[in-house]
Structure formats: C-alpha cells, structure tokens
Amino acid sequence: MSDDLESLNGVGSTTAAKLRASGFTTIEAIAVTPPREIMEKTNIGFNTILKIQEAARQMVATDFKTAQEFYEKRQTMKKCTTGSRKLDEALGGGIETQALTELIGEFGSGKTQLCLMLSVMAQLPPEQGGLGGKVAFIDTEGTFMPERVYQIATLNGLDPQNIAGNIFVARAYNSSHQCLLIDRLFTLCPDNNIKLVVVDSMISHFRGEYVGRETLAERQQKLNQYLHKLIRLSEAYNLAVVVTNQVQANPTAFFGDPNRPAGGNIMAHACTHRIYLRKGSKGIRVARVIDSPYLPEVPVRFKISEKGLEDTEEGGDDLDQESDIV
Ligand SMILES: Nc1ncnc2c1ncn2[C@@H]1O[C@H](COP(=O)(O)OP(=O)(O)OP(=O)(O)O)[C@@H](O)[C@H]1O
Ligand SMILES: [Mg+2]
Image (tube, rainbow, N blue to C red; front, side, top):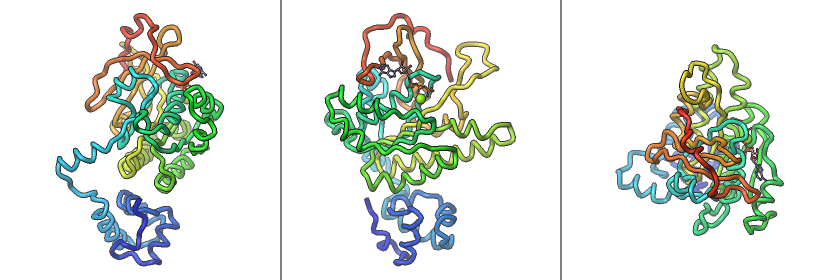
C-alpha cells in the first residue's frame, strides 16, 4: 500500500491531511476516484485535484499499458475456491480477483450461502485455494449469520474464532448508507489486507427505495457509479468482489424462464462474471455462468450442506431443464 501522499507532486502536509480526513489515505484511492467526488469531499480546488491525480496515476500507472503489461497484471489475478470442484471448474478455477462477480437467483437459491462459504474459503492460503486475506461483508438484508460462519469453519477443520474474527461485517440500512460503506472500503481494504468484498444484496435497497418510472434513471445512475467503484476497488487492491442480485418477474416473457436479473443493463455490463443459481431436484443447486467474456455456459450441480458448498453425485435430469434466463 502506498500511503505516502506527501510524495505526490503538489501535495503538502495541509492537502494530505484534508485528503486523509476524507478517506483518501492511499495513492491508489486518489488515482481511481472521479475528481468531482474528491472535490466534494475535501473542498480542494478542482484544478489542484486534477494535478494531484495526474501525479497519482503516474505512480500507480493507470495510463495506457501495453498488452504485455496488461497480461502481466492479469497473471497476478488470484482465484478463490467455492468448495465445489465442479463449480470452480465452471468458473475457470474459482472466483477471480480484479473482477466483479454477480450471483443471481431467486430466494433460497443459495446466494447468501455461497457468500458465507467464500468468506471462509478466501482466508485460506493460496496453495489451499484461498486468497490469503480477510473479508468485508456488506449485508443489506440482515441475513448474515455468524453461527453459519462458525459452522462452516469448524467443519472444514479451521479455527472458527480466527475465521470469524477476520470478517468485517456491516449492516447497510438503506441505499445511501450502503454507498457510504462502499466508499469506506477504499480505506478498510488496504488497511486490513482484505481480499474478498461481498455485497449481499447489491440492489435490494435501490429497488425498494426508487419506485416508479420517474426515479429509474437516478437509481440506475447511482447503481452504475457504485458498481464501478467496486470494480476500481478490485483492480486497485487485487481483490475479489462478489455481489448478489435477485431475479424479477418479466411479464413480457412468453418463452422460458419468466424471471430475469434485476438492475437491467447497468448490472449486466458492470459485472465481469454473472452466475445464475437455481434450485434443482432433491435440494441440489444448479449454477450456470452467463454472459462471461471467456467462460463457457455449462451448467453444473453442487449442494449446500452443513460444511458449506460441496460437489454432489446426486441429481437427475435437472441440468436439461436449464432455463432461458438472459
Ligand atoms: N446448514 C445448512 N445445511 C444445509 N443447507 C443449508 C444450511 N443452511 C442453509 N441451507 C440451505 O440454503 C438455503 C438458503 O439459501 P440462501 O439463504 O443462500 O438463499 P438466497 O439465494 O440468499 O435467498 P434470498 O434471495 O432470500 O436472500 C436454505 O433454504 C437451505 O436449503
Ligand atoms: Mg440471501
């Protein structure tokens, strides 16, 4: 982490203090935040901010890169196991850092369970399939269950106190509180070696608060802004971001699954990987990667058990009933 703000051209101790007091404690955070936002929070002049950002970008190299440099950055990308070998394979090895992964599904499909499992697995060292770091969990629905974390940790042979002690949980009470908490991640993550960020769910407050067509544009703009913040966070600190999303009824669908993910194109475009979860027969879950830039859309089965997520040999023809969600 580069927190030596005074080393930036044009930043003296007064400016550095203003930046730090507003939560911009690292050069990365300054480089990747829109200038208007820094201005609003710090009261530093716009032109000064542009100069500071230019210096910050040079230090963290956010300018054009060659394809080779880009390739090398992607080599530092890490993958976190889900606990299910089949699901990991479908994901190309696991949940990726430097990316935003969206879990989509109806109630009870296993989104929160997968988030809890990942919160434990992310803490494993990389050679055991983890990310070797801590976890930040933004819970918007009050469904984060610490007991479940203890259970998953214990049954996977880990020290539950230690695991639970490394998960920072915040309950977001409304969409603006959720936005504040996301802003807070830019200091919380580098200060605590956080390697997984979960927002469960990304959209429920937005959907609940912005009702009616006339508020839709504002809602989508806010959602877009915060999804992009999460992407910047994942890239700046090489961490994985997982958000959950509900499905909503699509009354115009004549064929296939009448449900589609909420959040429209904004969600669809911001998320690097989208995973659609649904209940199969006999309590089995089916996951399918949708809209991925490079992963095939092959459905896989797994089960939710006391241990968290596991592979399963059970299940019948439920893979064939794959719905037409888009
Ligand atoms: N300890 C456990 N052992 C086995 N299965 C469990 C256990 N705990 C939860 N489950 C399963 O997980 C399901 C709940 O899934 P989860 O809460 O992840 O759904 P969700 O997709 O987050 O739904 P929502 O949209 O309502 O938030 C339960 O119905 C149950 O089948
Ligand atoms: Mg849930």
